[in-house]
Amino acid sequence: FTLVSAIYVPVPSQPSLRIVKANSYADADGSGSLSAGDVVTYTYTVTNTGNVALTNVKVEDDVLGPVSLDRTTLSPGEVAFGSLSYTIRAEDEGRTIINIATATSDQTAPQTDSNEIYIPVPVNTLDIACKKVDHNGDGQPDMRTFTTDINDCTASFEVPMPVIGSNCPNW
Image (cartoon, rainbow, N blue to C red; front, top):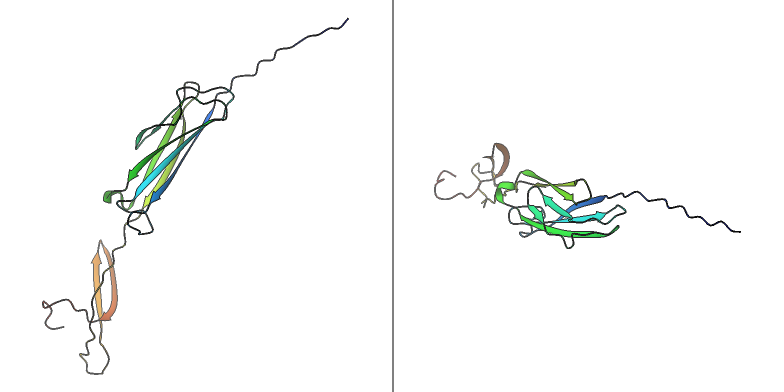
């Protein structure tokens, strides 16, 4: 006689998800850094890290709004993708943009990932056309101190006499 028995041990349901938010940008003006007019593309990757299917998967970006995902039902291990774009404005320069993406499903608690990007203030350059002037008669161009005050930042340096225009007859 053979005794056969089976024991059923239920595996506990463990719904879980992970969101990863990343960014890239197109340097529209070729400046080498983020500046007004550049487009930042945010990508959102949601992964079902649990052992049950997730339904009604959604992502909301607190700055840019709802994210359209390529799928809203995820089996264990499956991934959903979405993206949003943002065009940098002049008023963004000199500040850090921080935004938070929140992923939810009918089976899980909300999960978040944040992303921050610093938008530098563009460096303005000043081109001065200079001519060589010898006021002291030593045969060498004279140096003058030129001082500028732009946005509460003062820089002084010596340059040959700048050619500013006819409004400077003594130069």
